[in-house]
Length: 256
Image 1 (cartoon, rainbow, N blue to C red):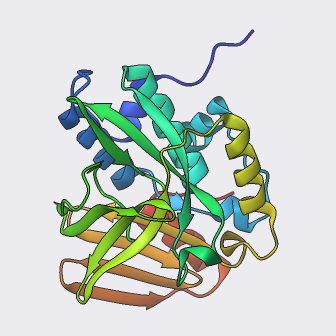
Image 2: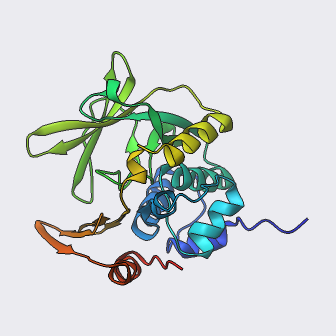
């Protein structure tokens, strides 16, 4: 039986984490920040209609050894394994992404609830839009700012709990989830549907995103956006060679 690839030492190097192993809110925050700032959210394999494995060693090889990224099921599965290995109590949950309403969406997103310092925290290293930079304290109505982004958790009478993002005009929902713990089979089903359904959002265009200390770098369907504080720069990327170079230069992603 070959040795398993998964190990904390290599993961820590990948996310440039040099802190300790104490199970604490501060450790959780630094791990979360390190992940989203070094492992990009991306759907490149989904777009190319490749198989998306949630096997832990497959995830580790792809995102740690091969310096790729992944989408929610890949990213949060790896992060959950890291937290579990370090001793954090963590549960996995399916979320319903907001698309002009929650009734227009199925449960096609994974989020985590982790415990640290006697409190629960929403962790999500795998959402490409208005994503969490750091864990969100699971306290209803509390506005929390990380790297200039403000989020909060609100109870929802129908869908459990909403994670919301503050815009110039107020808070907007991102997704909703319940406290029901999901089993591995639930994620295999949701991952398979999301990765293979022809009309899935992730099958329509290439996308990649990486959080930075001053904003975010995003690539979507030939358009590169760099948000640096209040400054937004947009660049059109045309042709396969230019796209590969942009993915390598801005996200560290090397495609064959």
